[in-house]
Image 1 (cartoon, rainbow, N blue to C red):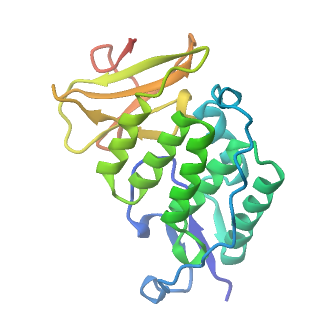
Image 2: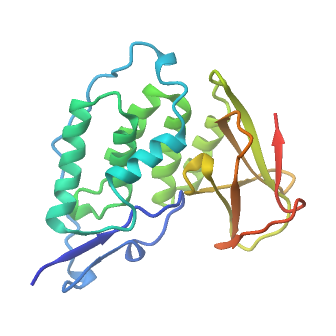
Amino acid sequence: MRLMLLFTFLPAFFAVPVSDWFEIKGLAKKDISPNIIQPNFKLPDNPFDNASEAENITLQEVDAEADNLAPLNKVYTYKEAIELRENLHKQINNNPKDMGLYWALLRFYANAPNFVGGNSNMGLQVAGYIYGMNKYIGCLAYEYVYSRHYQFDLAAEWYKRSTLIPLARNMHWQEITYAKTVLTQVKVSGNFNNWKSQLMYQKDNGEYSRKIMIPTCENCNYKLILDDRKLTDPTKTEMAFSRY
């Protein structure tokens, strides 16, 4: 019988139960071994000669490339999952300046079951490496890994750190806000994050907010997701851009 493994790199920056993002046909979940396959991989030295070389890379660009390298919601066999991880390792060694490769590997470690190499510690290691290349995207990488493993306090801390990063050239701060009450959480999905959902965090005044560093643009499109319900046509009072 062919074992089919489904682990989806869910298009979200929040954690979901393991049972929601992978399935093995013909194998009961209770039979899955908890043993972790330790990857035999060492990250290369920081390939950039100076910080400015990578400062204008955007999350949208990085995530879009990661989608091409490791498509979302793809069904993998056990062998294909292992091959994907090893292929990302090889490509990084051959292209150490390609941040999309690191983001794809980060998503693998944060989302994949442990018996094919999913490993939050390795995910944090990759996040730290990305931080050394681009501090803003690095903060979001830490937020991603921590949120995928339900450590929302640490995810919020790294989000807050991202808002303190000095602006890169040709970039500006954009804040998205939502002032109404929700039952669980508010997320935002837009062209600035490749239409993945990111958490918005509640401020002291009760307002939900997310501040993002993006290139100056005239067509910054986005949607809010309230309690996992999308607002496809929000009113101006429900959504507001506040430029800093």
